[in-house]
Structures are given as structure tokens and as C-alpha cells.
Image 1 (tube, one colour):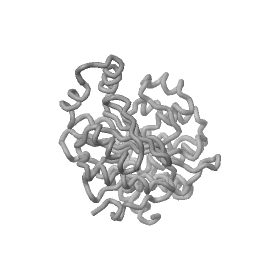
Image 2 (image 1 turned 60 degrees about the horizontal axis):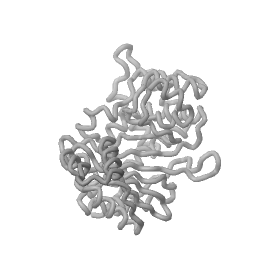
Image 3 (image 1 turned 90 degrees about the vertical axis):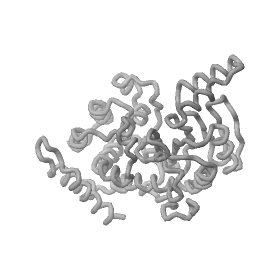
Length: 330
């Protein structure tokens, strides 16, 4: 069955579809997978879009679609990308980049980084993932070592503290439920890449009343001074105040951009029932709660009442409460 025939092929639209300036909100996706080399991946993406391919180095290619923009295809290892740039400059006679890549193919994925796509154009990504599947792309479950994921970069409607506070509260209330709904692969659960927020942060975020942007960032950094969170807010906060973020984290890999960097979903691209829409639609439950003030306040009150001293909130009970709301509000 083709992905675009799947029940999860339709991308759900969030309640807020435009940014504060009136322009359409956009979403970028990053897909990690194995099974294909960079040349085959790039050709597959280019052919599926009818777009032009530009080979930059042996580790980095670009496919440019005139409507959607530039798709970056990379070997997802900084060492190899740096090595490939060096070989390109030096005109090296031996291609060590691809030789090294062959040794770590089950661990180091190929990554397709999609451009920011308007919400109205998301369906145009289905031919890309269908083509990669048919070409032999392998996802998270292809190897016990494969911690391959899908990263979703949804533009925030604006960068106001009130808006970001609502989204963070909504995500914190749904964090455990989302982990169950995505059915995260054991390898990724054990990795540090998609760590959940600590429960102390889940409570503290609700304690803020009309916080300033500075208070919101400082509280986040106190509990989460790392890129390794399922919802990584560092890129967005760096967009607002990069100096403040880097002073606490000191990581030059943080790419400042005005997006929620959601990296929880597995990449199951080799599963014919899987679609990008399935991952996106789970994120849209956060969008729905963040823009429903009454539900947000009611769930917050229930969550705080559920705290059992040092034992914290009963996780399974809370997941069922979140599920009741998600089902009733769908």
C-alpha cells in the first residue's frame, strides 16, 4: 500500500495557521535513515520532485525544488562532513569519506533535511518519502543500533513569552502521552537524544504567571541545559537571545531558528503504513491544547493536584487522563 493511501496520510492543520505578521506558518522535517548511500538518496529525492541536484561534497548534496526550496541530503556525522570538505579542497586521490561511512552505516544515518514548507503544501512531501521507501530506505527498526528519528521544526506563531509559555505548558502536560502514542523504539528510548523533561520542570513551568521571555528562558535552561530533549527549545530560545543560551549551554551545534524542534518520533520509513503525517498529527495535539485556554487550565489543575510528594504524579494515570482529553477534543 502506498503511504498516500494510508489513513494517516492527511496532514492535520493546527488551530493557528498564520504567524503574527500574517504570513503562513511553515514546517521543516528532518528524516534519518539507512539502507541508501548519499548518491542514491539524492537522486531519489531529485527524481521524486523533478528537481535539480547539486553535489557539494561526498557528504553533502542539495536538491533544489523551484516551489518548495532546498532539500539538504547529508551523511549525519560532523567528522565525515568536515573530512569531505577537506578532500574536496585538497582534491584527494582516496575517498576516505565514503570508506568510513561504509563502516558505520548502521549507526550514522543519511539525513534528508526538508526546507520550511507552508502548511498548505505538506502533502507534496508524500512522493519524496514514498520514493525513498521504494528505493530501499531503512528506518529505526532496521538495526538494534539504529536510533533514527524524524525531527519536526514547526514555526512558532510568534516569539512572545505568553505564546511560548502556552506551548511549553501544553507539551509538558502531554509529554508522557506522546511517548506512548509514538511507541518509541527501545534503542531511541535508551539513547540520550530524546530525553523527556524532568518532572521538576513539568511542575515548575506551571508555576510561572505571565512570565517574561527572560524568565521563561532562564527556567528552561535551569532544568534543560542540553540539546538532548524530545522537545528541544534551544534553537528557538537562541533565536530570541543566543548569548543567553550559549552562556549556559556552550554548544555551537545549536542552530538558532524560530521553531519548536520536536525530535521524538521514530523514522519508520520502510513501513508501508508509516507517513510523515502520522508524526506531524501527534504534534498537532500539542498545538490544539496550547490554543485551548480552558482545557489548558483544567488539565494543569488536574496535573498539579496529582502530585504525590516525592513520588510525583502517577505516570500511567496521567497518561489516561491526557488520553481522555485528546480523544474527546479530536
